[in-house]
Amino acid sequence: MTTKTSAKKTMPRVDLDATRESLLKVGMTHAAELLEARIAEAIKDEVPPHRFLDHLLRDEIEARDERRVRTSLRLSGLPTGQTLASFDFAFQPSIERSRIETLSTCGWIREKETLLIQGPPGVGKTHLAVALGVKAVENGFSVAFFRLEELMNAMKKDADLSPSRLRRRKYLNVALVIICQATPSLTSYGDTYLYEGVGAPKCP
Image (tube, rainbow, N blue to C red):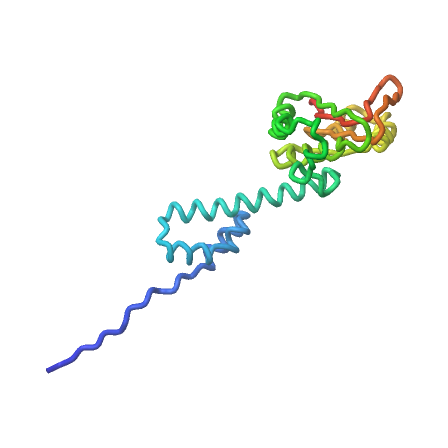
């Protein structure tokens, strides 16, 4: 009688270095970081190949969008911590929440409309303006936030610039300019009048 022994077959180890390097070359840094974990998850859960690719691409897209939003918020000059989620609508029942939620879809920016928020001090005008600015950034729009005095000083400084150079200034080169001042009043600068409340989108 003869006996035969057979070695237990093992799955060959997959070398991910080349795949990870390719992902890095095309700028998919987040996907490269998650590659091994996503493969392990796909094997464990028997995820079809196209679903595995969907998950990996979704990870990369979400990471890129998060980076874009963080960078855009930093460049916008928007005060931090003032979002629609943190606004106390119960404290200001006169504000129509549904109206603000409609504005947060940014349709008015796409239509190049102007938004003016008026009211006495302390009712949340600045908070709402900033919150809508945050929503604009999340929706892919460039935003710049200015206090009225700051904007007027910048405009005065740039008054003698040529049109080509002036167009490169931040307040003329974004989709939405928010102008805020605590006390509503009209201020004149030459023949230009700016309302000290909340400014709105710049129309190219």
